[in-house]
Image (cartoon, rainbow, N blue to C red; front, side, top):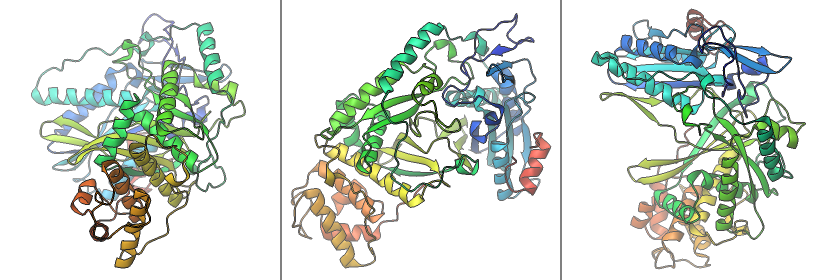
Length: 564
């Protein structure tokens, strides 16, 4: 949310402020949509180590009361389609549950977390935030915070957690925290004139005009369903070997591309290789905090931006990366353009319940995976269950530091009741294969027919030694572009090099379904040794309306699920 300048005497007095960019790009314009669980931003942190629960509850409560947006109440002028807010309401009071002392089972606690994360707010009456501290045991504590998206984004989540931790540490140390007073959201205004905005919208529309507003996904789809059940999502994840990651990022650096741009390029290539489409609109989230005045403001500043990617029949990987870089930079420059205005010009007949221009999203995942409460107590973010999705397909790109080296992780979120899981998993393998090709053959044409399989590879009985050998032989023949390979000659003596080794790692892992690392292939350099390596490897895992507190606790324990 980026509100307009105040039109009253005091930021926290009896004043209603017009919200000029409420949910830009998330198309919230009516009360029913404001109540959808997709408009909630839940955060679940599990702390391991000793916790002073009284101090933690107090820290959460103080943080919820410090920030004006977390005290906001909203009203909707239907005639003018204008959302307004005031910030003089009471803050939410965090709750505390000693689940161990009260005999709650793990299943009951999980149900409580679901209820806390999915129960909607009455934005006219309630503060748009709730929090619960749950003691699971002597060394385990949950912090569950859910905030409505209308005043909260990913940057706000990090700010709130930092705030809570700073207040907690000060409390246990017996000192007053050194925290600045957070600015009121109304102090941050959009300074553009309507004429300036209209000019920007026209430029973006001209750049995107002619591109299809749909992306053809290469897996079976059920009949369109805008119900809540259709929005239930799941995640599939894969990660490139450190060697493949190094190769990808080296080529990207040569073309001036970031990991986000790599993700866009790999996604566009995988889509083009598995279907007829060559012109794509791809959405991404922009923090929307270019103005330094927003640095300490908890609010909904994030915007959705759309870039265009085209892929010609002779384009190489370097051509694709260069094109993505230009499109991304153009989109960054116009990141403050209202997406609804662009969408209205390009796709006036869109379904308002689904993304306005593109059903596909790419984001760089930079969110921390841990929260340091004190030196002896660290929290980790729990995956959300249930997960609600807003896009047909959302790709999250992350660079992870691991003991073996840096790895490029690719995760796909998708509506589990809309798409076939096997098809999505195979598409994820296609993304890996595209990334390996980018690293190994940057001068090769992206759409080269032999570069990527378009159908799932036949199942191989990996318990059969002969079948294992033939699988490895066939992959060697493909990677080395030869008809003959010897079972007892090393990969490098057979014509391989370090770049081809990256592709070999990806192909062996993809076709065997086993975890294969570059270092393993150095130690097992022949066809025979790699067949035995696959036999011994582990299978690759795929990470897969009462509103008061008493009613939420009862709903969690007796109903076993979320309220509606």
